[in-house]
Image (cartoon, rainbow, N blue to C red; front, side, top):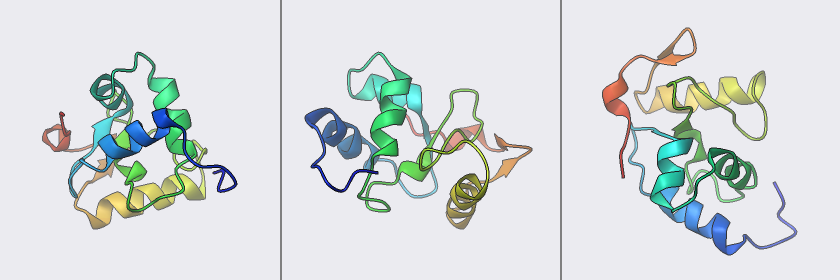
Amino acid sequence: MHPDRPPTAFEEKVYDAARLIPRGKVTTYALLAKAVGCGSSQAIGQALKRNIFAPEVPCHRIIKSDLSIGGFGGDHGGPEIQRKLALLKKEGVIFKDGVLTEPERVYRF
């Protein structure tokens, strides 16, 4: 995260779209990319990694297209991923063996 600089216009666009994801739902990096007119899921991940507005901008609700957990806070394992899983579990979104158990919880813009 980079609190020493304001978000770019692209990051703001990503954050505004992420704010639309309701509690108890998730979306994918690819669906979020499509929603903001971006062709790169990786660019979405980089913008979310710099999110200084969590939990107002719920970056924990974005997962990979294969419905696995993805990254969080710039990490792809360890305590940050456990934190992401715990936040989602509080919202009723459950993962088993690292994969979303209820695909109907995927939010489509």
